[in-house]
Image (cartoon, rainbow, N blue to C red; front, side, top):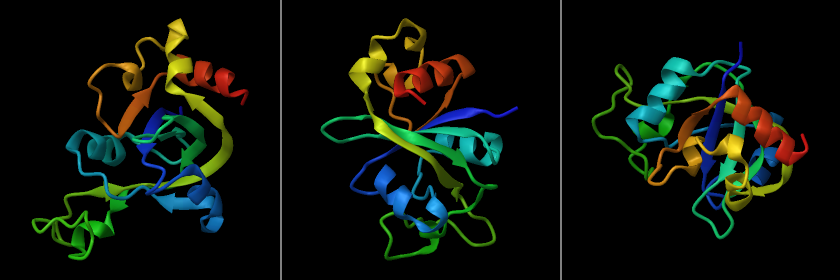
Length: 154
C-alpha cells in the first residue's frame, strides 16, 4: 500500500519546473541534512509512494505539483563533494551518512497556497500546517492526500 509524503524544496534550488525539464522528469532529492527527514527516505519511502511537491522559502509557499518516489534510497553524492554546500567531512563511501531518493513528476498543478490549505478542517493536523514545523519531508495521511488532491483538482 503506498504511503504519501510532502517534500519541501526551495524553488530557486529545485522547482516543479526543474523536475518537469529533468531527464525522464526525474531528479534526485539531494541535500537533505536532517536526520528525521533522512530516516523517512531511508526507512519508509518506497517506489510508487505519492509526493506533494511543495515550494518553500519563497514569496508564495504551497504545493506546486504531484510526484512519486521513483526508486530505492541510495547514498547522496553531495556528501562526498568538498565543493558542495552539502559536503559532510564525516561521511565516507563505506559508511555514508546521508541518502536520497529519486522523485518523478506525475503532474504540475496550479500552486495550492498554504493559506488555502489552512481553510480545510481535514488538513488541520497536517504537519506542514503546524507552527514550528521545519522538516523538509513529512508523512501525509491518506485522508490529507485525498483532500489536497481535491483542492488541486487532480
